[in-house]
Amino acid sequence: MTGPRPPEPLLQMALRVEQDIFLVRQRGREVAAGVGLEHQDQVRLATALSEVARDLLRTVDGADVTFALDVDAPTGRPVLRVDLAPVHPLPDGRYEPQSGAVARLVDMLGVVPDQGDTVVRMSRRVPAHAQALTPERLAELRAELASSAPGTALDELAAQNAQLIAALDEVRSHRDELEVLNSELQETNRGVMALYNQLTEELEATNRGVVALYAELDEKSVQLRVASESKSRFLANVSHELRAPVTAIIGLGRLLADSASDPLTAEQARQVGLIRSSATDLLTLVNELLDLAKAESGRIEPDWAEVDLRGLFGQLRGTLRALATRSEVELVVEEPPAPATVRSDEVLLAQVLRNLLHNGLKFTERGEVRLRAERRDDRWLLSVTDTGVGIPPELHERIFEEFYQVPGVTRAGGTGLGLPYARRLVALLGGTLELSSEPGRGSTFTVALPVGGA
Ligand code: ADP
Image (tube, rainbow, N blue to C red; front, side, top):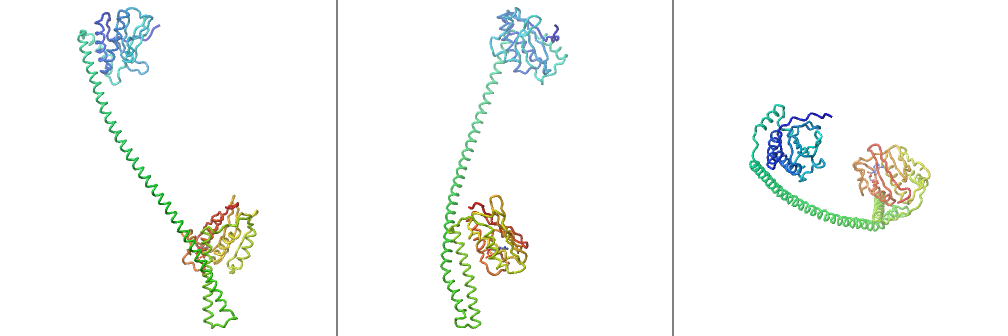
């Protein structure tokens, strides 16, 4: 069997006596330096070599040492190879270094078969940035090694000492660097801790602020509820107290105008007429205020029952036809789809729809006002659509405020309390009242109610 041709040796030497160990070490370092190994690696290789040399001298009386340059198969990079062919065969063909740490000093250390024998081989890769090892360079190196006289054991000892001192220096400088790094790390740690403490404090301060804010908010909302309750109570009391005298004024006016009473002059009759109509307006206002105050203070309890929407719509059709007197406006009440029942309070619901239909008729010049019912999942949508003046989008919420009336829309009467009241009632019935409208085209007010009640 023919293997690849062994590389031409750079240097060969014999290891037979104690002093040769120093020599092998020294020459090993020279070869390592020659092929371009870094200083640290030169020392590592030399040290490993002297350890292995000592072992082999003791166990097999020495070896023939060959230095050669080989090529690392996978990478194609050059490696420095040292073969130690033992004088007597290795026991069991094996070799274990005395010190386990030796193997770590080189890339590879072990026994390999060599022409029927076994040799101890170690190798170390030449770094990529080393000088190119051309055949010329190798020849030169061979010549240099051949001519350089090997030093004495004392020289090698001195060199070894110098290397030891350099290694110690390096260790010290590493330690110094480590100390600097450590103190920097401690400094950083202190900084981080300080930042962390500061952040924690800021967070706690913020938390305290938020808690205080919430407490204030709670207090404000309690104040607001108390204020709103006292407003409702005040409205309820005042309107209740006003109702009796206003009703009396209307009655007295009727008496004065009665044909059975003393006849009035035309002027007196006109003035009494004014008093009566003003008092009637006032009574309407007072009644609406009272209703709203009652709804707001929660004093209205819905009377829950199954309400038949067809019956309710029929009733509204009848009562409101009287209001739709103008021929340009048609009142259309559609027939609700079956089964047309909803759990609600019939009186309150009628009040809401009447209010919306009334508004529709009031604010529509021509076209129609339409009431329709539509079932959407578990809700009823009851909508009142008109073809009237419409409401600008920015006022869609404002018209639900008490006393608000869209400016510039001239219509006799009205208090601005109808819609806020309607919305209150719908809320009591568990639903919502929404508006969609476009100025000039008309409005749609939609009451959405849960089929099963609130
Ligand atoms: P009132 O009708 O007594 O004035 P409401 O609360 O019912 O009070 O309505 C408030 C205002 O909303 C009305 O004055 C009117 O400006 C506007 N509005 C209500 N309904 C309609 C409608 N269908 N079309 C146009 N504007 C309306």
